Structures are given as C-alpha cells and as structure tokens.
Image 1 (cartoon, rainbow, N blue to C red):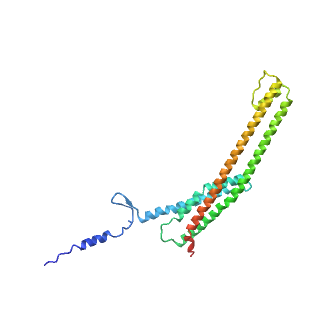
Image 2 (cartoon, rainbow, N blue to C red):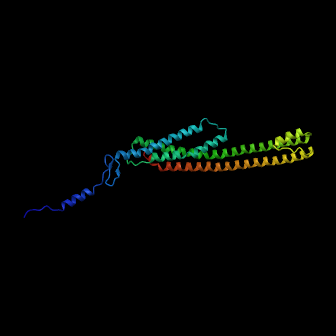
Image 3 (cartoon, rainbow, N blue to C red):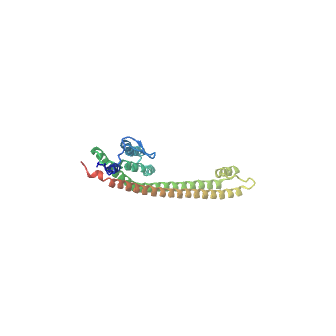
Length: 263
C-alpha cells in the first residue's frame, strides 16, 4: 500500500501560525479594515511629545515666576496680593508639566534620565512648599489691605463732612443771589429766582443735607463692596494655595520611585 500523507500536520501548522503574537510593524501599515498600525518608531515619538510638552509648561512657569516677581515691591500689600493670586491661578501649568514628564510607558530608563526625574520630583516638593508658604502671606496681606481700605474710607467720610460743613458756613454767610448761585452750582441744583433769599437759603440747606446723605450712602456701599470682594479673593487665594500645595505633594509622593534608586 502506498503511504498517504496525514492531514493532521496542516492544521497544526496553521494553528501555530495563528497563535503567534502579532508584532508591531516596522513602519506604519494599513490594516484589513482600513485602519493603520503604528510602528514602534511612530509610537515612541508620539509618547515623546508628552514630556516635551511637560518641559515646555515648566519653562513657561519659570518665566511667569520671573515676570510676576520682578521687580519686587515687598512693602506693597496690594502688589503682593495680586502676584499671589496670579501664581495660584496659573498652577495648572506646573501640575500638567509634572504629569506629562513623569508619564512613562518605557520599562527601562537610563540613569541620566532617572537623575533628571529625581530632581524634578524634589522640585515638585519645592513648589508645594512655596504654595503652602503663600498661606500666611495671603492672610497678612489681606489684613493689611483691609486696614488700608478702611483708612481710605474713613478719610473720604471725613473729607466729605468737611466739604459740606464748609458749604453750610458759606450758606449761612450768603446775603446775595450771586453767593447762593455759587453754592447751587456746587450742588448742581438750579435756583428758583421768584423766591426770597431766606426761602432760597432754606432750600439750599435741605439740598446740602440730602446731597451729603447720598454721598455717605455711596461711600458706604463702595466700602461694603470692597470688603465683600476682598473676602472672596481671600478665600480664593488661600484655598487655592492649599489645594495647589496638596496636589504637588501628591505628585512628589507618587514619584517616590525616582528617589528609591540613587545609583
């Protein structure tokens, strides 16, 4: 009898070829359904853009720090408050920068790169301490700005009272229509010339009282708005500083793997 080849070898070979792990192509190629497979080179270059963007964000952060802090005006609480507010509002840049840099899909990292990542991990801690340090400065500057605004408010109230008292004194000494016209022009109120001087003086006295009350109410409203805005900015600044420092501390703790091996 002639030996016939067994058909079992073909299925085994086919199964063996089908179970092989698909390798990433050396160059971008098109799949059967119209999709594309990225090569190792294209995939690695795509991932390399993340740390590149991270370093760019950290560079912009340093530029922002230099731009905001120089020239320093350490005796101006308003300047300090505005600088701290800007730093808190721009904390997203270093946060994203650190995340992009530390995101790594490689199993092996060179020693020089590990030293660089270790330095950036400690830099995240330094940034965290800096933002935590904004907390006492924010409290102190808020109190100084409050006192400054309160002093301006009291000065404006006293100045208004002095001006209207001067008007009352001039009204009391006024004897002619021309004198009354000067006072009426200051109050921006026309005079009724068909009335006697005593009646006109009584009208101007009432107008002075009303104008003074309106001016005081306006100053009080402005002062209340200043206090409200200052309190809102105080909460935003200090809460933002605490949250910024906390997130940077988390980045520092989660990158402890860069500090374990110091070879």
